Length: 124
Image (cartoon, rainbow, N blue to C red):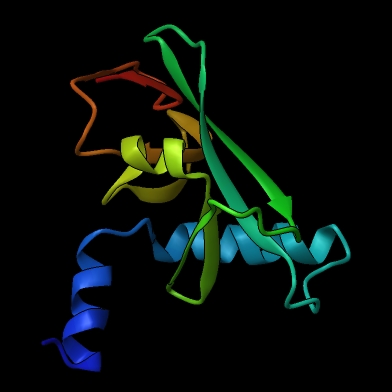
């Protein structure tokens, strides 16, 4: 028997996380798209075939939940992924870099056995 707090802790251990820098950029992009004030919009993260390491990350804004979607909220950002992609994304953190070595979103994925230098593709 688990209490509500235990359930929240268990869900938090298997989630998709969002760094502070990624949160700021996601909120800015939602506002730029004109949907920053619409709570039905969320960040959809998925894994697709391709990229230099075999699998690539894909980010979109969406407002339609599909039947097998997995939903998370971290750092004030609602993140949704399909079940197949979530198997690759468990405990992954979405981050954002605006440094000299590259600008954009990247993923810190503990499930990846190999990833490319740009952080946009990986293999397991």
